[in-house]
Image 1 (cartoon, rainbow, N blue to C red):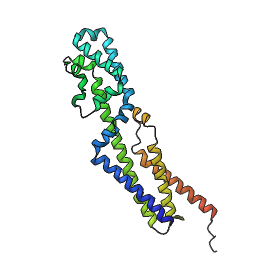
Image 2 (image 1 turned 90 degrees about the vertical axis):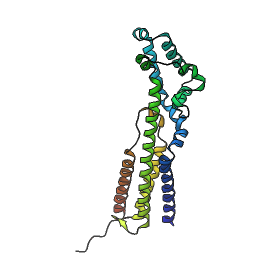
Image 3 (image 1 turned 30 degrees about the horizontal axis):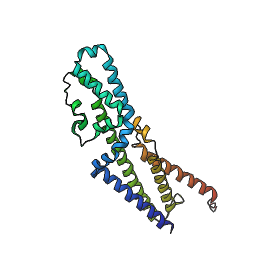
Length: 240
């Protein structure tokens, strides 16, 4: 009965992990649409920094001497639009359904060309926001693939252990399987419940650290269980 329940939990975990991995491969654009608002909220601090930098450049007399009135007006208007509603502005740049990141309501602004190289640098935050969004999204996809692939391998191994008879260094296989399953579930909860705001802001995705964390947790708990079991059930002394 214990094995059946354990194997049921492992099978569910395996299926969920396989579905998640399939989504990151075959339905990447759908994930991007679903995650767009989530990512936009978390890249706003860096977007604001980029806009602040552009605004500082506009205040420079040297830059203003190089730019014409049209270019200054375009840059100032873009900054004002961002200040008015940062999320709406970021959305307009990261929404793939709007080529070039242009909103219909901003045609009068976007239609004015910025031909000078210096002007392009002043308003380069538009490209940097879109580029940063795509970089963050690709890192999230890679992180999810590592997460789901690790869980798939670990759950398959846990299922294999639960189906075997015998023991590993006096620890029954089903106990080892239960420890591994617990390590996967605990690590998964920690992964899902992490502070994604700071993960994205500080670029501190788990990556390869996730499977390493499961391996360390499983190895440590298995070792401690084996140690406690050997103390509570000492082996009889060998006959002289």
